[in-house]
Length: 351
Length: 228
Image (cartoon, rainbow over all chains, first blue to last red; front, side):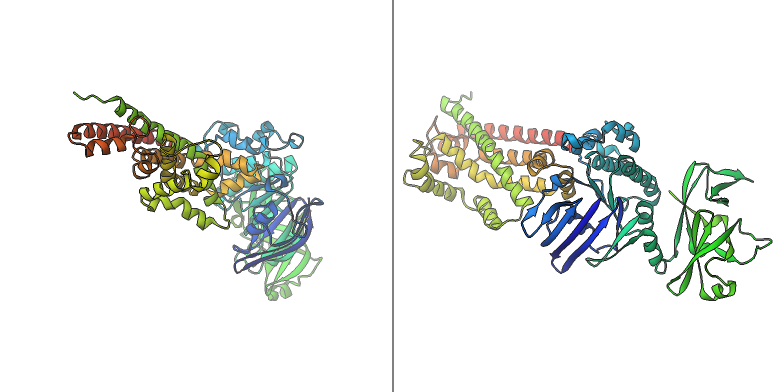
């Protein structure tokens, strides 16, 4: 997906200015509440008309104030998943799902109902009324409905913000999976760093109606390391646990991790704060932390008065955080070998 | 023993006919006006709002007289549109329909607007981004979701139409068997000596129809309430 926007819109005292070019299939739009994210996406989808500017999507002009070009919303083929599911209350789940599909030109109908049902596991819900669905089920149907309209781009406007944490991490795999399986490029809007990191590769940042940057999701995470209470959050997607002395153990790179919060599920996502990692120069003979990893320092960077240390363990990476004094004591610099100690209880399960 | 004259029967039938016709004819216009006022900002919106709601505050006699001036032989519409087409509305049951429609229209539009304002705007945005054009959205989302308001508005207008007196008597007159509706017949019985009994009889007919309409409204409201 290639998107190029140069628009200006005034809403009373609020001013939205966006001028950017981007290319990619998993793009994030990150910014605090009220920064204009939803408005910007509304402009892209055609729900709001900019005062002036140009919008190009995959080389096609969909808006140009100079010649009055303004492609109507239905013809833009930009699907949207909103904060709330917005399911049509007078239709069954199946009719909701097919609403966009039936309005999609025949030649664009590549995603079919049957394959969508299996990816999003909607089989049980089809003939129900939307009033009989749980919050998570509703959002799954809303995602399905947008995907089935076979859009060329899917905008997800904080689709997880209405859900509790537990449900959130149950929905994320469905979101990712549906877009990956069907090859739909998406723009994911969020003010949550974790959600953005899980869902996207590249991120556009927005603040007070102005675009403030375009960066990789890793850069975004490092920039926000200093202003986050839990510092940098390492995200670990781990598979196929086995048990040692009753504790779940996951393979991670060429090493293994003992995690109290683990269970016997084949796949799980964990977060680990950078401040929970203790670095040791030499192998401590006895230590209460159940995980001792043999790593190499691959990067050292500044973050809000402290130092971020990127650890390379086989093909995997972790970010630890230490104060400057510790770095001097340990002689931390790029390339040295070091041990990282992590308690089994330091990992928090997501979902 | 109660015995209605043929003129009484025709008054009852005419009342129902006039109220039904006025309601059915107003439905598409009422829906269009309610839709415009709810979902669109445009110049002249306040003026339109004022014109639509004016009959609600004006005495019906005034509305009737204005219609007479407008639709009569020398009136603007009468002279330029009706006469060339060979149409004569004044003092026919069609004039009663127009009077009823104008007087009841604001009630219909108000109920419809209440119904439409309750529709979540997100549903409309969702339908647009799913590929529906505006007419498609109106038919598949706004119409079914404002159905309760449409029904309520229609019932209200029908009930108001049954009782229409002031505007009707001026544009349609009070001709038994031709333009005399229940209220006009009651008026005539009341103003003639010994007509009280028949006036009360017609009142009961009027009450029966109104109660039937209210029960129908309640029933259909519950049915649609289950869906929406």
